[in-house]
Length: 119
Image (cartoon, rainbow, N blue to C red; front, side, top):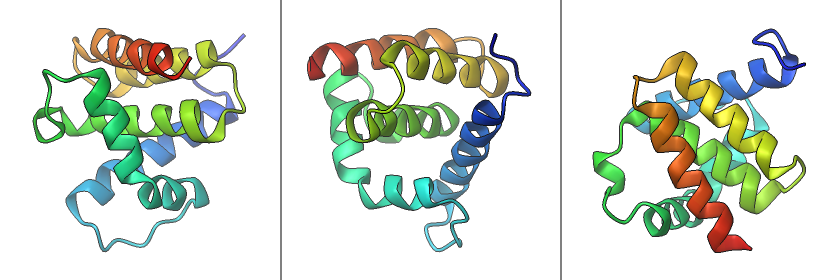
């Protein structure tokens, strides 16, 4: 059973936090290879988010939710190692842990659309 102490969950949280910080200061040193890969693919990732949430321009999405979405979209469409349900569930858990009360449902909706668009 997955817990907040699961090393994969902790790693995702650290990457999400680094993405969040990068969004404010693009010149920070990135500590995780995954974060660097996400930043290098940011245009592709953001275009998937835009297609899946057309009513929410990227600059209007809560910065924390955006960091979670970028990580999850990266895992869903580029890495493709974990099952899509696991990726979406982890993103929702990060939204519950770090976001506001609407974060989990927003993240779930966007990622569900990303997954359907990619099938």
